[in-house]
Length: 250
Image (cartoon, rainbow, N blue to C red; front, side, top):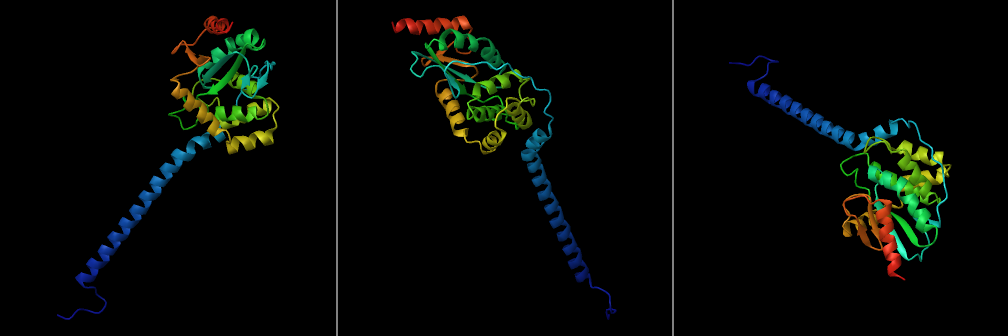
């Protein structure tokens, strides 16, 4: 039988159908890859985008007060006989209470008279499962304030404006606004915040804490010995430990 001109053979039709099927499969594969890429981008970029879009909100201002013998995130004489080190996370509610209630008494009673050197150690861990990294970023911001010799003012500002763990209290806009409220040099602060030059120092604090057995905050050490592990010490407990160290030196 002679095939009419213009008609397609069964083989040609099958070949075209197969080509169309392969084309649809390639298109579906491309769409799937694009979809996965968009999901990954949303996971990686979404939190920072939400942080950048988040409102600054109300900022609680602080009453700035002098601390004795301030040097970065330490206060007290370098050769003071007793060293008090406190590992803290700025998102930690117990750290807020300790820093607002116990720390000032230590500064007034022991640091001012040269008996204690007091050092704040970073232990950012509360944001471990959070994409917003508020513990890490608040630690970073505090070090940028320390660069301008304002660590303790920024430390007070952070605790005064804390309002829950991983809830946006320390998003990027608010951390920058805290610095503006304190009157810091914003060009220097912003560059420091973007460059994050103190990450190694913050990580070293945390790693040293882990080696010493720190698992939570605040963890208070007096001359290298942990005080009330697992519990937040009162001023009376910390004072007794300091007095014991001072007595042992007499």
